Amino acid sequence: MKLRSYLLLAAISALLLGAGRAETSRRPRYGGTLRVEIGAVIHSLDPVESPADPEEAAAKDEIGALLYDQRNPDGSFAGVAGSGAFHLAQWESGKRLTLAANESYRGGRAFVDAIEIEMGRAAKDRLIDLQLGTVDFAEIPPEEARRAGERGVRVSASKPQELVALAFTPGRGVGDDARAREALSRSIDRTAIVHFILQKEGEPAGGLLPQWSNGTAFLFPTAADTVGAKELWSQIAGSPRIALGYDSGDSLEQAIAERIAVTVRDAGIVLSSGVISQAVNYDVRLVRLRMKSSRPRDALAEFSESLVPASGLDMAPLPANASAEQIYGRERDIVSSYRVVPLVWLPRVYGLGLRVRDWKPPDAGEGWPLADVWLEQESQ
Image (cartoon, rainbow, N blue to C red; front, top):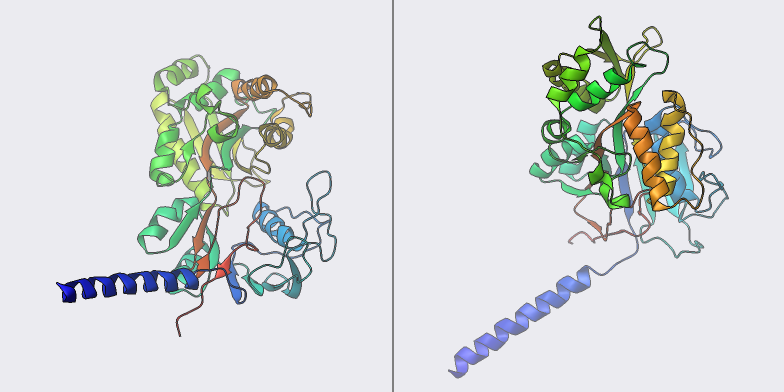
């Protein structure tokens, strides 16, 4: 009995000692270089310049949040030198850059010594590098998140923050017919897009704000209504064809456009899709809009600024102190016009290397919180 008691105590001591060592090894530590890959190609870090390419603009904004923590009233970075958690150490335009920790950062020094960012890496290459362990952090297309997880990649997803929608072009015959716009909206199977194209990494969108933002998303229907769409479309003489445009460099937009073109046939709608070019005029186009604020009023104002003028809607700006009723009313007015047709909400998805610790996905409007992560010491 004494021997058994001794062995039991020894076993418990060993477990506690091991747990203590594991806890110690996972305490935040300073040092190391975080390796990052992005798909965008950034040509200038000047905060005054605004890239036309949405992917480049988004990536530049993420890096700007690491370099500068002071913003102008419009939300753009003020570009005050030395104000961010990192400063620029090396820069090769369009290729790579290195950021070094700012020792005098008012928010406290970052845990990592440096961040190396390689640009222009295709999504498939980023996934391979994450699997091989040659990169610590990379954004993953939402539609690839499930496959990445099945391949052993650490995947982290934010709340839905990016809206994919259809925006009708004013002045086009079929697009100026409210019945045609409503018929197209009703005929789209948003759930099928989420399940089959996004691999369930997202949610159907009926409104311009996600459910977590203002709690009214459920008031906007997302289910397909083929019967209603067919009835509306039958009222339009001449059997017009709707031309849908999308970004040639965006494989997700292409997949969604092709899916829509197939599903709307059940309502009798003839839709042709193709890449957006100056040579072809489109009745409606796919757009992707990322929330720049978690506040419902500010997010809706940003979306309205981007979508409403281009869609021919004439609406006064929301007041700065807009009430919940005013915000919902504005959202309802835009959606019920069918000039803008919400489709799906996407999260921001990230792939993380095995040595990255204390990562938390950012909220809408926040940049990569890379100043807060630390790197686990590799075993000796």
